[in-house]
Length: 74
Image (cartoon, rainbow, N blue to C red):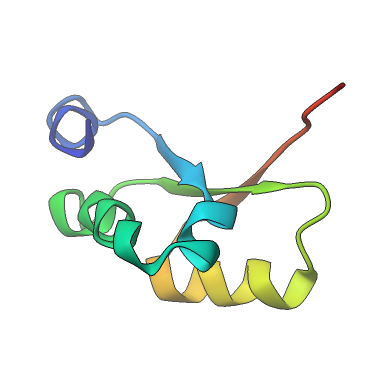
């Protein structure tokens, strides 16, 4: 998906940072977005309950361009 976004100049949102922080084994799947699209717009996706410190950390680590907040309604 990152290559497709790069090729067509599209914005890409990564999966929820909850997975990034809770499962170190999946982190490479997040890093690849910036590796494959070094100058593109990458969104860090977070739930509305994510602490601000973790949001900032995730944005910094992923070199995200912006934050996308997702709401899971139950």
